[in-house]
Image (cartoon, rainbow, N blue to C red; front, top):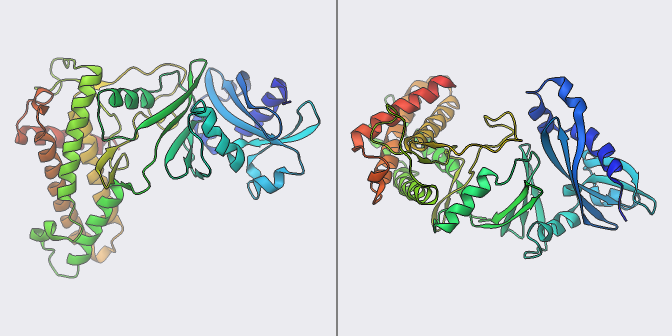
Length: 400
C-alpha cells in the first residue's frame, strides 16, 4: 500500500525546486537542464501508513535523493507541526488519499530510518534533526550515532566513506568510527557513524584562545607581545597535539592508499599521499580522548566539482597541502577575531593576533614533525618545512 512511481515523481520534482540547497546546486547549470527531471530509482522502505520511500530523481545526469513519507491527511498536521515547508502534496496510496512530505520532518519515520540504513543492526529511541542546508541532512540518534542522509548523490564509494573505512582498516583511532553505509544501485545514500556529544570544534577552541588573549592585553597602550603564550586559553599545547594527530593521520593514509612520487619540481623532498583535502579547524574536534579528525571529502554542493555523476579521482599531493590548509585556518580565525574589535583597538589586536598565529602555527608544525616515521613523507627540516607552508598559505590568501 503505497503511492505509484508517477505520483512520487510528480510530487518530488516541485518540492526540489523549492529547496535552497537544490537551487544553490543547480545555479551552476543552464536553465534548460531543469526541464530534464526524471525518476531514476525508487525503493519503498516502509510500506503502509505511515510509509517511507527512498526516491532518486535526476536532473540531466545529476542525482538527488529525497526521503518521502506519507500518512492519513487528518494525522499529518500533528506530526509535522509548523514544518509546513516539508509538505509535498496529496496523492493516492492505493487505499485512499494520503499527504506526502519530507520524511525527515516526521520523528517516527526518522527514528525508523536508522534500522533501514544499518540493515537492522542499529535502532534508537530518539532522534533529532540537525539543521543543514548543504548536500546532506544530519540526524543524531540517542546522542550516540550520527547519520548523514545524502541529498546530492555521488557514485559509490563516496570519498568520505572510502577514507573512513580505509582508515579504520589500518587502525587509525583518531576519527569517528563508521557504523554502516546505506548503498543502492551504485549510489551511497547515507552514512552512519559514531557521535561524541562532548567533542569541541577546533575553530571554537581557537577563537576562545585568541579572544582571551585580546581581552587581557588591549587595555594597555602597547600590546604585550611577550604574553602571547600567557593567555588563560593558550592553545599551543593543544595545537602541538593536533600536529601529532595530523602526522599519524598522514602515515595512516600512506599505509591505506600507498605513497607516490610527486612530479618533478613539486614540493621537493616530499612524497605524494592521499590527503584529507579540506583540512581546517572545522574538521577537527577535541574530545576527552584527544583530537579526532572528520569532514573527509569535499561537499559536492559547495566543493569544486560541478558534476556529481562522475567518480572523483583520488587526490595524491604533498602532505604539506593539508598542513597549509590548517595553518591558513589559523589565519582566518585571527582575522575574524580582529574584525570584531572596535576601530580604536584594531591595530593592537592585529599585532597580537599575528603573534598568536605564528606561535600556534609553529607548535602545530613541531608536533607534526615530531611523529616517528614522518620523515619518509616530508624530508624537510623544520625551517624548510615552515617556509614551504608559509608560501602555500600565502597562495591561499591571495586566491580568496
